[in-house]
Figure 1: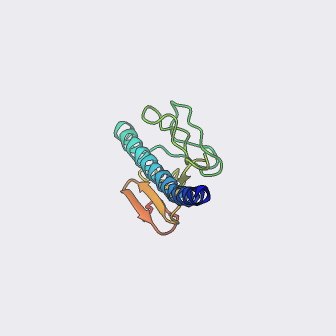
Figure 2: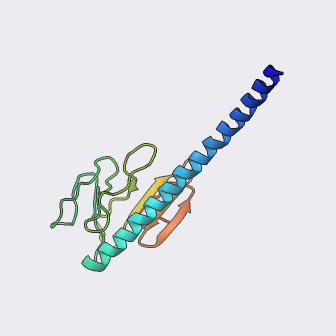
Figure 3: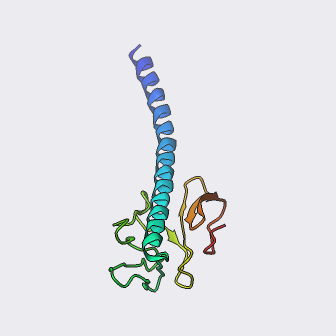
Length: 142
């Protein structure tokens, strides 16, 4: 009888662990989407005050001359959006910056995106937010 009880508990524990794994993935994806929405909101507020979006690129250059903004040398993402988002959020799993399309050539647009564990991408831009099948490659995002 004791072996039967232990076997049943083992089976139940394995079922719970499997379902927790997918719940954790969903939670991380929800966090990524929330982070991208925060970045979009901060960029819109920055635009309201400065009449242009914060620009950043992998060379580390930015158009904000009054604040120290560091651009990630891999993704080009800013470490903050002055006054509105400090520090900028990072991916909950990799702890690296989200994808950023270089917008130094056009400060009236921006595109930031996150790779979701579902294989899709969540992008945010001057147009809003959207789920995409592939990583965006232009400032228009989609």
